Amino acid sequence: MSENKNPEVLLKVENLKKHFTPHMGLAASLGKARKVVKAVDGISFDIKKGEIFALIGESGSGKTTTGKLVMKLIEPTSGTMIFDGEDVTSIAKKQLEAYRRKVQMIFQDPYASMNPRFKIRDVLEEPLSIHRIEGDRARHDEMIVKALEEVKITPPEEFMTRFPHMLSGGQRQRVATARTLILNPKMLVADEPVSMIDLSTRAEILHMMKDVQRDLGLTYLYITHDLSTARYFADRIAVMYLGRIVEMGPADMIIDKPLHPYTKALIDAVPEPESGKVDVIKELPISGEIPSPANIPAGCRFHTRCPYATDECKTLPEPELEDIGGGHMHACRRWKEI
Image (tube, rainbow, N blue to C red; front, top):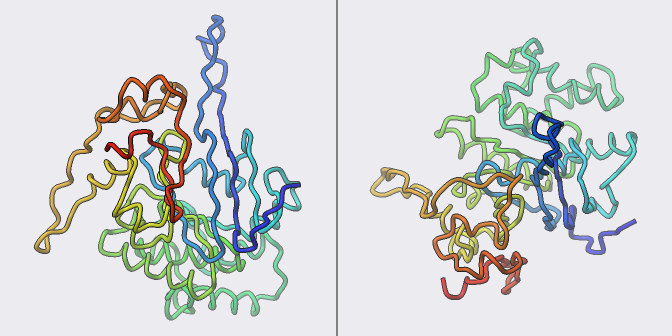
């Protein structure tokens, strides 16, 4: 069994892969080979205890699949995951239940993740019942009230009798967060937790989540396409492209001094506030769309969209992450020239 030798690290991921093989279709029945979809294609990172670690990338980059792997909603093709010193890559059902108490998920759509027929009290009691948490109704109500107070839902007793449709988007996301906290987890996987919330409420929800993380000593895996929220919210950022991490490091370093052309393009596309107004979103300085993970380009997988690509980028083996100091890592051969 692998062991995490660093007591400060809560989650260590090593060369994690998730490849999907499509179902047999007409082309396969005619003798053509089925192309393997390489959603996550060999990523390594660690998340320290009490840290907020962000995964950034476009749709199709593999960040949500990574979150599902960490949550054990899907099994990896290969690689290892070490959580709190234990190998959790492949674990039995009983161990999986214990793991999911320690690692909870905040979903993108809080309304879709709740039973609309449940009152808020029932929504929060459901995980207590699933995980067979001991206690009578009065004890469970105490736990529910405490969880709602932690996410600034007040007065909690009044909200417990409401249904999800009676709450605003921000309130529903607070309740969804409270539902994860009620099991006293060690880590939360937050998949685009504010993308379906009004712009005016996003900062408020992120501020609440950061307060909860600080007060309870939680660790976050924060998955988003929004670099602006990642800078405010995360301690470290990993940028994913087509199933691989192409740049990783402290949040301020990644935003202020990006080295990979893909990271630069994502940052250049972020609207900039000027004189109290927000400029029109700039066009990405890269062309085309992200390739299919079933047909990954040879060489550097970003070369088909990179304005700085040379023949070497297309023909030489794919560059590995290089640490240039301070924990700042990148995977680009031409970073010094660029």
